[in-house]
Image (cartoon, rainbow, N blue to C red; front, side, top):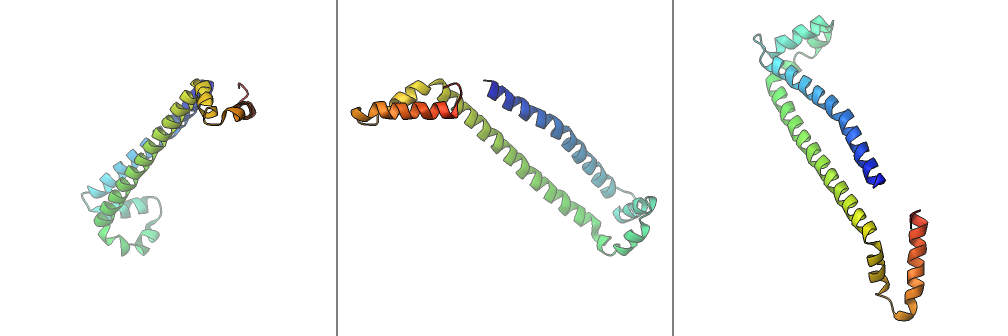
Length: 147
């Protein structure tokens, strides 16, 4: 039970650290994209103003030809971002489901270990059962300090 509690605490700790930062970064990106897309002077001029504000006007001028169609590029970037976010969420949900499944199976295997040991030993011929039980018991003792 302590192992399960430790795993749950570790997962909650990691989620508690990563999730607020991720949400904040996504919110900032959405606000920036929205501001650029809805700028009254157009997205190109808005980005040019930001670049000049931070002393990057020459860099912006160098890339101004590529920034001519910023609206379509922003739309494609937003679409790609949302698709990749969906894949990350699906992967995270799969990981959590697998973790819960493994922990649940482990719990029930530990809970009914004697019954499973008896069933496994019962698969062998009667003369070999004491040897198999001894081997399995020694294996359990080697891998678990409580066995």
